[in-house]
Length: 547
Ligand SMILES: Cc1ncc(COP(=O)(O)O)c(C=O)c1O
Image (cartoon, rainbow, N blue to C red; front, top):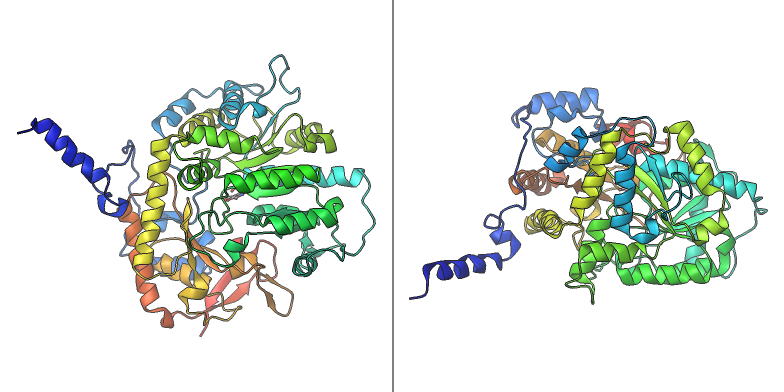
């Protein structure tokens, strides 16, 4: 008879090897609740939700009161994190001095520790001297500052005369750029012949809005596996290298920088491989074009590299993050995602790079911009306590047990939806489930019916909130007809807030979606009552059901 403790250890250990769906309730979460929030409403309050949705919100999910959502609020994973006790403790120690508070030094130190030595200010330099970190109150404020200063710098260099695109561009790429250039609108006015092009694997909507606002053309170059819906390819967030090469070979003068969004939120929350990052670095280095990350979900991306990319199994997430960032000239980030914060953003610039070489005054100008719009650069629009919470968040987010649980939970939710027959985008990404609305409605919906908006409205009636990121969010209206996004995306996103929900909550949302799916022939499209021709229209528009 073996020792009973040995015997039971081996039995318990066997449970850990079960697939995560089955063992979900055996393997505990790597944290426990230390504060909870009771709901102020009930799942049975259907009539109240109908009134709020129709009369107050005009079927716009962004305008629906959050305190009247009894189920999962999956509108965004941004700023919705439940902070850890360590973060709350750090907040209590917040130093609210006007300049050079303690949190600023903590965050700066942690940025160097998390992203690697290139992002650390050299010792011996004074505060503000070749500063690598520019703090903003959130990601889009950093983007806005970035493109405002960049476009000013480009103008100061003297804009080249407008000329036709090179005939040597790949024909499909050329016509895509031409079509996209026609829809560029700055401050709601038509474009004065945009000259600059900013390519990315896929821009997020606010990045795209900020680029357009400066009359530049945001150009998405998602990889072929993404376009072909290849569900077996683990890195569908990658960039198409042939198109990038062809663009830089023929139109380098028009490209002030190249982006990669990690993970690729617009393209289904899909990760980008280290191989793709390295190849983009090689191509941009050869053409001497700066290379930046939109780095919001850097830790989740690194986890996918560790789990799925050859040569990275067993490597520490911390080391993979530093390797990824060793390839970039700069990045901007919303700390509301993998900073595990409720607010915060930044631009980070490497001291010696193609970017600082090309734009030597940029760091100084961005500091002036911070002072005019956010506050002193040592707090950048945030309270001292927020800076402390972010430093702590960056220390937590790369922990293996956190990322293992976080991403497994998103995958279990997606697996549940797929098992119920709901067409979700595969492979499932790190922070959200994307429901393919074209497939959900069997390809039957017209482009101007916005069935994704109808779906999100009925989910609110059920008591859960999700977000349309498809024909309405990314399409536009030319005064006569709808222009769908290119490449076409028509998704509804269910983004999972970090450390906030349990499987039971997410599975309740899955059941509501299943009911809608089973009765999809009873879901009409919507009419746009207000805001169809606005920029970033999905945040502001109002709708009513057709028929
Ligand atoms: C990829 C990406 N970039 C930028 C942003 C903008 O960040 P923020 O919401 O902090 O302004 C987001 C927000 O969701 C995002 O997902």
